Length: 139
Image (tube, rainbow, N blue to C red; front, side, top):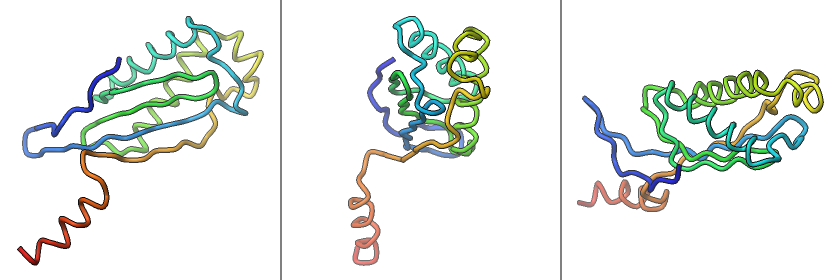
């Protein structure tokens, strides 16, 4: 699943080059992904959700109680909707595969904590862009 971060992506009428680091945790930080099989299943679920939603997963790691994704997707998609697709879809599909984990560790019915962390990154630092904009009038 490891890919180099792509450069600008050319679409009809626009070009974009942004990437999102997305992290979210399990409810109560309970460890759900404790075996290679469970990790593999969650990776498969997230890959499927990405494909259905036109999202590119550039890097992924499933930890026992949280997920890290490096993503890229078209500007027409709102980041919050992408997060909802990943968290909602993955919880539903994972619990369908493992009702015993749901009953043992997530009796409230929620796999994920409601919060998440997301940051953007590109091929230029904030300082580089600031400097570029400041120098526009001087050129």
